[in-house]
Each structure stands twice: as structure tokens, then as C-alpha cells.
View: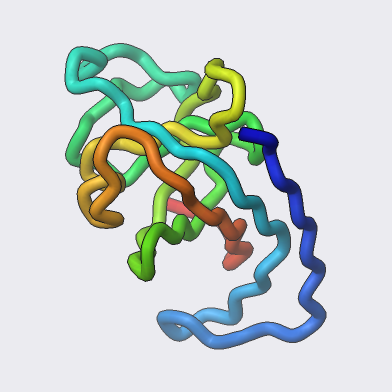
Length: 121
């Protein structure tokens, strides 16, 4: 599947959770889900992979970036904690918890929006 890249610069901001949030970049593409067998393996941010955490691996954004991921009408927030995926045509690997929140099983089409709301803790 050809990676479709759309960069959207939105000049306006919206309020979310009491913070001003600026939507900066937007991507569409294929997502996959981390294997449970990777539990405890060290990610690029130095932390162990925990399937219950809302994390992801992507090459599109810096480590620590907060993202909103959309799939079939559902959305969830994830933090970029690792690099990848290293499979042609895929733009993001999601933790098990993030994939379940999106009702994504295995591989699926997603949209990703970067959120800028100050430092992510």
C-alpha cells in the first residue's frame, strides 16, 4: 500500500482537556500491533515495552511525541516510545492497549495526528 502523506498546517487552535492544542501533522497509512512476546523488551526510549501502556513505534515523529490515532470512528492517544515499524507500507506499530482501544486487530488503516500541548509527562 502506498504511503499517503498529507501535511496539514492548521492556524487555529482548539481546547482539549483544558489545554490549547495545535494540530500540526496528519498521516494516513497502515498500522500493526506489537506482539505480546515483546513484553519487557527495551524500546528506543529506554523503557520496557508494556502491552497495557498506550505507546507506539513510528519513524514519522520524535520520541515522546503525543499522537491521536484514529481507526473506524474510534480514537486514542499514544506516546511515541519506539522506532519502527520496519515493514514496508506500515507507518505505526501500536501497543496492545492502544490497538484494543481502536478495535484494531492485526493490521488496519489508521490516521495519525500529532498534538502539541507542551511537554508530555
